[in-house]
Length: 364
Ligand code: BGC
Image 1 (spheres, rainbow, N blue to C red):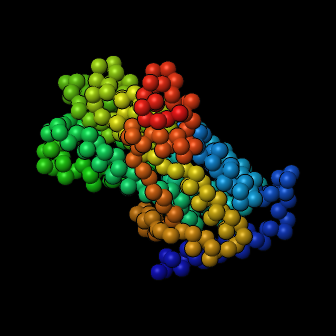
Image 2: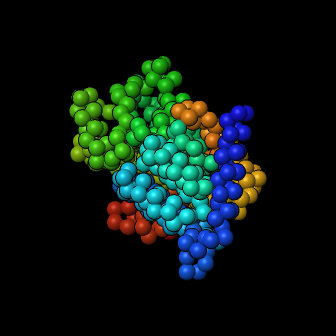
Image 3: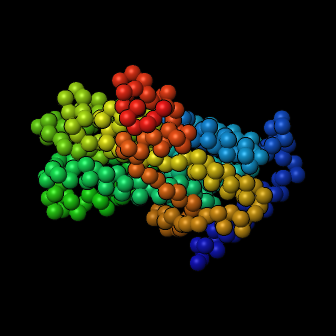
């Protein structure tokens, strides 16, 4: 209750400060006169989603709310993340939306923004120990549970199947939640001996190439034997598949993924990747833009009404008002849905060695 009240006070202070500067907000207005919102994305190399899905979908969602969105990508550079934020705060954006590289930089940026009276939204990644007013993401434990359940299904007729887990960055709270969800599904099977966990390894910075190297070492260390792989996203899955291919194991060993990227979907159509998790980023972008619009107007009641859930921040020991959307499993049979939803074009998938797989699945 106390934290809730303090949070509410902080939000109202931020809102008062923001509306206070509304009268001389010439620097937040672009040539067309729309108010500006700042968005900072974390990286490009860890997943194709940030530039491929988030950027265009956020641009569109903010435009629909009457904003001009200044969307920048920190390219995995913490210094750059911070200086981009400094620039946006100096420019007096109406709201700052951040998908932080790690919790420390996210928390530091939110602190500075609040000191300048600018509300912040944690986008996709919750900065632990942070102070953002709201959090918009997917149910990330469920993302992991979908991955774990799918792998268990793929291996159900292989008792004692050996599993290697290639996890996301230990500094990304989402990666922790994905692992938690995977283990909801897999730990009972490891415990009963239905499956055997060879090793679970987080990969610093979600670096795809490093993920491939680590997987190769684990595979060699296990005498070249693996029956299933948890890969936390499509980028890591791609790196794992490259190693499996080298060993003549691709297509024989189910590999999980996440993000429904074009490369991930192609790997599924080829039979090299078993599944990906589709996260409707259009909905995530729309939710962030809707919240930002309410915050920019100082309409805290509308923002609170939109945030239907909470996320616990164990470091800051607070519950952050959240919008958490539903992820979905995509195996070969569901690839068509992602195409029909407009996320990926059939022409981007159905060429070269993948072309033949599209017809029977009705993808055109
Ligand atoms: C996102 C995933 C993404 C990963 C690497 C996570 O925080 O939720 O969608 O694949 O970061 O960029």
